[in-house]
Amino acid sequence: MTTRRPPSPEPFLWLLFSGGGMIAALLVPVLLFLFGVAFPLGWLTAPDHAHLLSVLQNPITKLVLFGLCVLALFHWAHRFRYTLYDGLQLKRFSVPIILFCYGGAVAGSLISGYLLLRA
Image (tube, rainbow, N blue to C red; front, side, top):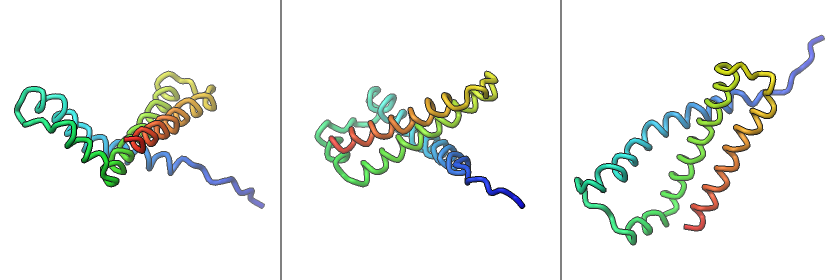
C-alpha cells in the first residue's frame, strides 16, 4: 500500500520564478532606459507629471505594474532561496529561509498593491 503525499507547491513557485524572470527581462530594461537615460538626457521629451498620473490611474496600467512587481519579487525570492540552499549550503535552515524569502515577496506584493490602489 502506498501512502499519498500532499501536493508540493514547488511547480507553482517555479512558474512564478520563470514568469518573473521573463517579465522582468522584457519590461524593466525598457523602463530603466526611458526613465534613467532617455528622459534625463533629453533624447526623448519627458512626460509631465499630470500625464504620468493619468496613465497610472488607468486600471490596466495598475494591473501591469502590479504583475511586474509581484512576479519580480517572486523571481527574487526563488532565486535567493536557492542561492542560500545551494551556494551557501544552508539547507538545514530551510523553514526560516522559505518564510523569509516568500514572506518577503508576499509582503512586498501587498505593499505594491496598496500603493498602486492609492495612486
